[in-house]
Image 1 (cartoon, rainbow, N blue to C red):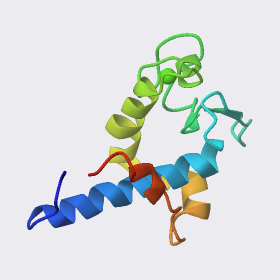
Image 2 (cartoon, helix red, strand yellow):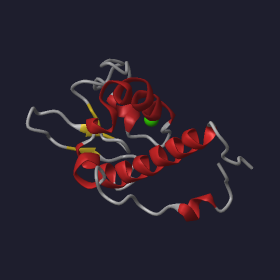
Image 3 (cartoon, rainbow, N blue to C red):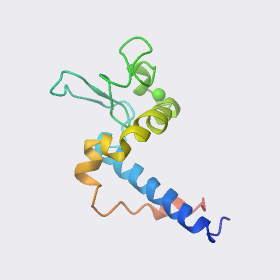
Amino acid sequence: MFTPTQPFAGLHEKITSSFYQGVCLVENESARNTSAIGGPNSNGSYDYGLFQINGKYWCAEGVNGGDCNMKCEDLIDDDITDDSKCCLEMIYPRHGFNAWHGWERKCKYHPLPDVTHCFNEVTL
Ligand SMILES: [Ca+2]
């Protein structure tokens, strides 16, 4: 069991806050649907998967491409390892959570979902 102590107390808070933000994000972007395809957007692009990653910038249809160098089709399968990598290594470092309009509309400055029941088996 991880017991927050200085200087880790701030880190613990940051990790759990990011987790809650991420849960809120996927709730409002894809309703937790890994095969969701959103759009077309005003520029004709589509958003793919759990994190609704935009096909104009981050992936390419049918071939590896975009800034995440991956196929958009790989964003709508059940393996979210590559989806998460694209978010954590490319999208979030550039734009933070503001990259996701669903997060901006429903999570930013809003109460975050209560997911404490998720920690019954796992303790940070
Ligand atoms: Ca995937």
